Image 1 (spheres, rainbow, N blue to C red):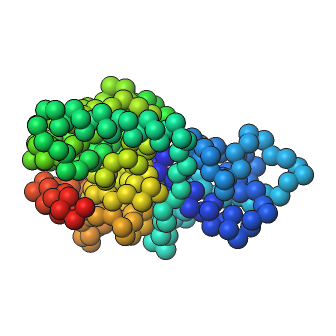
Image 2 (tube, rainbow, N blue to C red; image 1 turned 45 degrees about the vertical axis):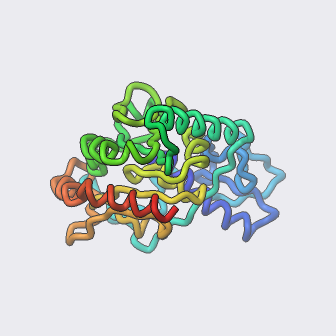
Length: 287
């Protein structure tokens, strides 16, 4: 998952620091430190490149190929088995003052562009993510991906476009991106890195998109979100009760297939654009 994993790890670090206030909390494998831009300014996490023999350390062993939400004993070459006892908690994001100011300014500029176009005040600002992580996309944003599994999390770009078409005259959509990715019509697109995207999200009303790193960022920033899960992984494992999650809980879900999966495609087909649009409208009315 990449940045989403790192955000989830900050929740573990917060709990560990609470229980071990005089100990350095390290994310890594017990020998090597795994730092992340997500951890920047986080007072709960030790962020030096090397360990000091004179200090005490507590390891959070949450890293690539050792994720707490995966049952590695059962996982095989074709299927990921999930740890159904795992429940994710909102993590922590510590933005710099410059990031906060930049995010606010981008949201102000984006809403002004929208208001100048439509001649009225914007009711709501959504950060939208219609793209799934491909190998190319991951390299551009500095994140990680796992082959075809992300195709099983794809609701379909055309559906996202239909959703924007239904709502773009009522609300402002901001699509943050990096590099040569697909961009929706009717949105304000902003090229930036992931930390900048989080600063924009902090100053927006909500996130909508595939279950992704920005879903976890929304939870950490205490923002509402509408997440498309499909049937590959359950929101009971890596989702949040404060969010609206579109998940198809059939007999094969959550399937965890490591290859492109017909079941996951059928689950996505069951999530209708009009239902997601209605959910957006309800969120806007209740804001």
